[in-house]
Image 1 (cartoon, each protein chain N blue to C red):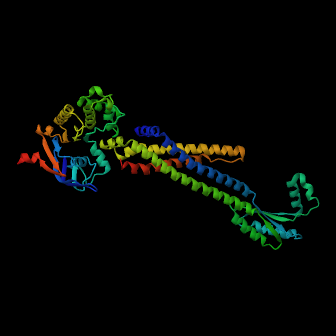
Image 2 (cartoon, chains in turn cyan, orange):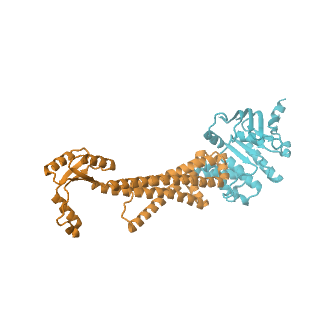
Image 3 (cartoon, rainbow over the protein chains, first blue to last red):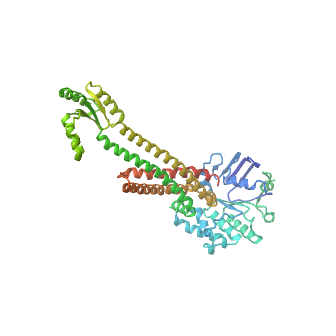
Length: 225
Length: 281
């Protein structure tokens, strides 16, 4: 589903961000991506949704290869991914509903299909009653739920979450984490970057640890030993 | 539909820049239009004037009328010539008196030279041909002098060319400026919507989809600029008609072509800049 083969990413000014990473994430998996700031987590995730292409090696996501994908292929791929960030990235001048609907509108989904899908996604994240609220009227945790609803509304096969709880307090963090677990339980894979070790320690999920661009620990390998 | 709405939103968000784009497109086309009108009207005047272009060969006193008639017949066979008529001394006098009306007494007892009046075929009435024919006519031994509206015609031709060139040069300059200003408008629009565009990309909107509203915006500015230019030109022409001279206006096809040109400017300005700026978002 997601396969990295000897992937290296170098930036002209800051040097090597990802260093010869080979890994595979299977269908329906839940994977933590951890490591200190600057270890290459964000660069790695960006290559999953092909916002960046590797300098060398190949990234394959659901049949799309970083070596051959056109801009159009990348757009098509992203409709099957759900992407969530630390800073939510909601549009302030749109309500929760409109923010979620936005993801469908701009990919040409007919209006009649949009409304029920949006309602379902908002229900799924526990915001059924807050559809008409603007982001500024919502708490941080609720804003992140809107962002997750937007990620879910296209029925993605994987949610890619880059520090989704980085801006949230403990209670909200637990809520968001639980939500991602529920989503995973329903069959959607989740790749979540975090440096909240507290969160990881209590879980049985696969953990990838990065340092200086390389994957230095993979709990899947450790279990196999 | 959504693209159109988005394009209109940009108009509302940056009204000054949008208005500036429209205005510069309008000025570009207005420059084309004004000088185009001048050229058009000079051409029209030339056509009318050319109808009357005559080469008049004055014949030496005492030439036998048969010789003159013979020469007129020869000249009439030149490929450029429509007809050549002999005008006797008496006819010349009668014509002069008629043309002068109240002052006909001036010619009492005067003697005017006989002449051969040569009219060229339509399409041959340009300065070069007129000169060439005049030279041939002058070669007849009994022809004293040849007159034709040489300077007049050349001046008018030159004026028309200058008007045409000035219109094209000024128009193209303004068109280039319009493109730059449209580029700036698009840049502002792209930057003010950077977050939205980034999210569109994340959720899988295609580049074409993201570009579309900006290009529609450029097209709209082009249409508005074209209409405004047409209005300005028409207004300017009305003023000239009232206070200076009667002139003719572009026909509908040329007017439409002008608006179309505005659309092209708008399109090029937006296409060139939207690609460049989107890449930076």
